[in-house]
Length: 216
Image (cartoon, rainbow, N blue to C red; front, side, top):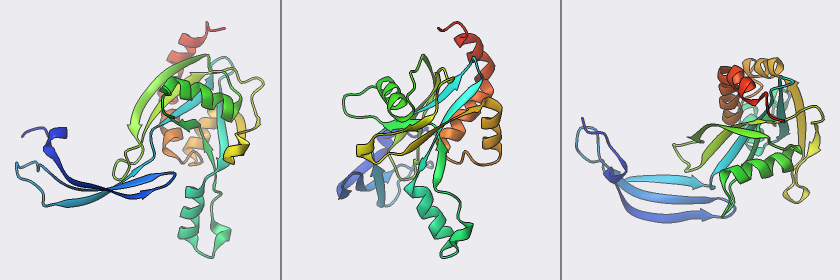
């Protein structure tokens, strides 16, 4: 059976359905089928917001993880739709997350990692280890996120950060590695980038502790 690739897609028409802070494009297309035929004409919308970088800040000397807590409209809307008027059962829309930001034009992923660490958490990144690049929601969005684990010193980390002009109000939380693992197990790290990054740290913690011990 032939392995299908990029050339097996035919774009018949592309239209902009919405263009504001985000963009939604509508595609009319056909693509090759696994049995060798072709689909009928399909209509697909793609939510386009650029690409992102996420950073899990880890202190190998104190065995601490630095996480962020901030309000997220997506979490609020989900809980409102789920519970309706019974708001007493709604989970908090303030989520525990890793450092993250959108790649601006002309910026490299590494530049975004360092910029966001400073803006969102007041942290200097001493070293970066790539976790991987993944699609955020490939069924309807072109966004990818490059994930890193970063070496930091956490002894004086914490506080409130974020850019006022962007409406950011971010609480920086330092917790032990074991506490962070427990947060993951209990479902409190309930966003994809934080879950993936923490699971990577659980698999690679010993190796990066050895690798980063000599950093000053």
